[in-house]
Image (cartoon, rainbow, N blue to C red; front, side, top):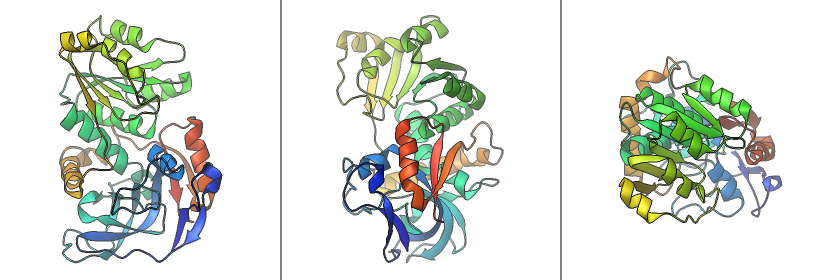
Length: 327
């Protein structure tokens, strides 16, 4: 099979097409003929050698795919060869064939193409788990999403709206803010021209927001605390803005606030399978109508142009998901 790999870590130019035998499914696994693979920040970190695959995971980049089930491992009875699926991968998505745990796959939603389906797994698993299971999002809550037009951010807008939340986002341009409003955000804050703390407090009459989904980290976390309501929750999902934060613990105590760290990749297959069950029950029935959860595909590149896909990602000019296809 063809796959996207590299001989040594580096910038996007190290990516190239390589050949390897297709992986075969073990007990409890599926082999998927990949039609589309999502591109994520984790992939860029892996390419740079900064995010090594956990033990037992594929060293090939790619954490989410859509395609067709091509082989079944022993004991898999919930899927059939030929089923159309999208799936969370333990690596290996940038390839013509990938093996995934059967519990990490979900049906490709009706009216969604494979390219659109590749925008779902990592973002939907992450957004739902952190909004619902970690932060306890309830109807009527107010949510602030940093990085609101990233692949994860756009998915979180849709899921939060579906669950009855009021959604604010931050983004780095008026173009991105306009897109977020189009996708269902109630307020969009251009952090280059507006102070997100002051804006958030103004939009909530000084109360602050119930939940902040922070895809930046660093010094944002201290500012998040100022923008947070009493009993609020900050969920930190990235250290793009830095791995250290200086917090006012007096404010943390006074607000009875919680700061929650979360990562999906290192979770067990059983934990990921439970999130898949939750998604299929709560979110998947809404996807066919494509509202309020809509696929947001920024751009599509063939495997042979993976360098361009990663350059696009690292430019931060994209809105939604960048997707690779094996042509």
